[in-house]
Amino acid sequence: MEFGSSQVNSLPPYLFSIFQQKKRKLQEKGVDVIDLGIGAPDLPTPAFIIDRLIREVQKPQNHRYSPYGGCREFKEAVASFYQKHYGVSLDPDTEVMALVGSKEGIAHMIHAVIDPDDGVLIPDPGYPVYRSAVHLAKGKVISLPLNEERAFQPDFDSINEEDLQCAKVLLVNYPSNPTGATVSFETFKEVVDFAAQHQLCIMQDSAYDLVTFEDYKAPSLLQVPGAKQRSVEFGSLSKSFNMTGWRIGYVVGNEALIRALAVVKSNTDTSQFLAVQKAAAEALMSDFRSVHENNQIYKERMEWMHTALKEIGMAAEKPRGTFFIWAKVPEGFSSQTFAEKMLDEAGVILTPGTAFGPNGEGFVRISLSVPIERLVEAVERMKRIQTGGDRG
Image 1: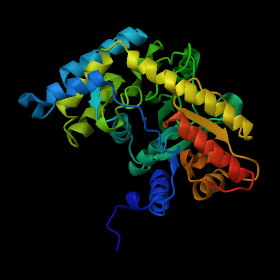
Image 2 (image 1 turned 90 degrees about the horizontal axis):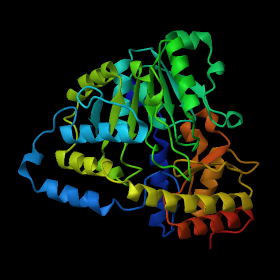
Image 3 (image 1 turned 30 degrees about the vertical axis):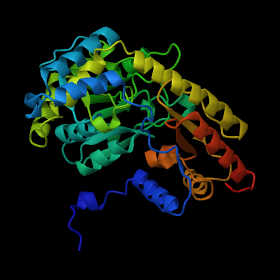
Image 4 (image 1 turned 180 degrees about the horizontal axis):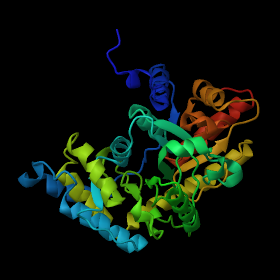
């Protein structure tokens, strides 16, 4: 007998959890598994953030409920970050909200703004939570193709008129998970113009906005004139400050959209632990030296891995953001069969591109969230399998 709702029971299994189950079984057999799958930073949370958390945890007043939208210090820190980093002005009271991680905020925002059968334009390939959130809200997923030929920029011309008639939301994500693609201000202007033409609200997932390389600086969607009239942007401290388990993020932008999200959240949770919010405020008000140091480490790993993949015949563009490489699978494999072969025979977890949508076929996502010596070992194993050897 099944007790879940029809939406829950019809939701496909979360592919990352399937690979983690396989990983545990291999580890139980004594296999040294190298996990290049889930994108969780391996670098430590900076000490100054932990020190602030310790101080705040010791204050009894911080063990009470947080205001639903987040504490004033955190919201002001987010607004200050946007002013300094992007030149975007935000009202901390009405245009900023704390989240229990941006994943939670995105899923709840979908519920807050769509009715059953409303369409949501989802990047394909894109973060799997976008699709599952629309499914759980009984909406209609409309694929927004991202193709290599267009450097994984949105292909608005591919969307048919019937889908546009029912569409209510346009969801974008740059720097992109999984492709690592980045965009210019001009691309975001095209996004805003398209949304205005078709009366769509926009959700921009900027979880990797600060994980960038060399002279590239990711723009904010809210820098586009008029964007705030129909847009929100989701941010996270998980990737830039190595705070994945802390579950702290934010949403900024359109007041009405944030107000709708507040209705859902106030009936679902009571925001994040105050001590975590105040430690996160400390991070956002810092000089970002730790972020730059992290990015240099990721860049070194990316440069090495990009060269190594080329040597074993796996083509990939060199990303300017995120800590992912979106690599083509060797000829004769699908995304799934190649990822399974690497896990079963080499003990290396790669995420098949189809985990991110049909348009991900032919690719695997490789996470750079392990030390470089583990990347070296992973490539050596992959090389042996591809040349007919074993992992030894």
